[in-house]
Image (cartoon, rainbow, N blue to C red; front, side, top):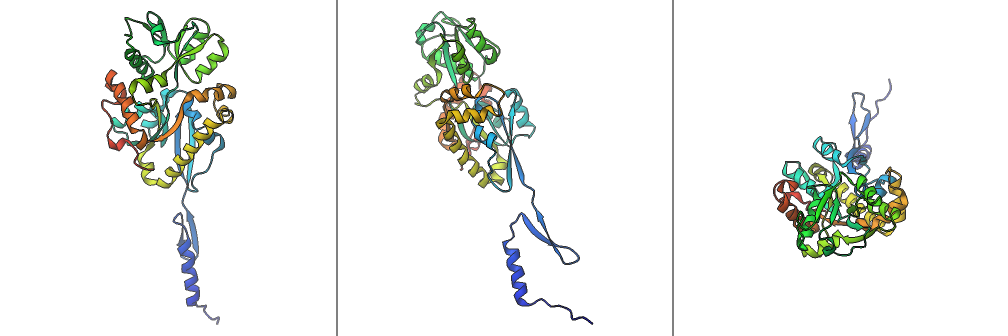
Length: 339
């Protein structure tokens, strides 16, 4: 008859030490044979959705290089072909994090979406361009100006600035709308829209193809002066589902810190950023993206520090149409308090 083995006190202490250092994501379970199996927790996938254009350019390094943030959190990026698809992704629960027009975030929050604004990143990309040698606001009197986005934020921002310079849309000038920027740029190049408001990177495309085109008015600088804030308007911001902020605070803190650093690299090295962005954007080519980055006014400002500028911007939009921000200014819960 064989002797039955015994577990010594020293062995018990050794086993306890092993279990004490096992991470929560890999807990041991004992089956009926007494053997221990380790169950590893599946990684959490964070879905980050962004429209194309400058919103996607702010993520150029992340999308192209796929950096890791946390061993148990994986980020998947989706660049939408059309910004019209963004709200659908959010409302259907397919966007854990996203970049969106700041007023869209306000509208979704007002409708009950449990999101928070982490910070603002795009501080205006609009420029008034002409092929007729005009130089100031008074030169616009009696002229026809071509825009896009009737009733949307670019339209409202421009109307606000016109009025601050004593120009009444409809009587002093004529505003004509072209369906989208993809048509507006070629219209200026062809001479059909000699005065037009263009966003980057469409502006950079136009400036390379129309030698007589020049920037007449920097809308961002005019906003800073007219609003009295000394700052441009927070056109687009980064939003997070509140559940992500609550359940993965360390990941979110790491992501935002690295995102801010990445924005600084994009601004400091537009050529490299152009290469990153061109690897996943169908157009424009890398040199045009690089040329457009200085005019993109990229700057990461946390929600806490951006709040006064956000409220100033939303108040102007609300004055023209409350529906553009969801009916009223968002309350404290709209702004991520930390990190």
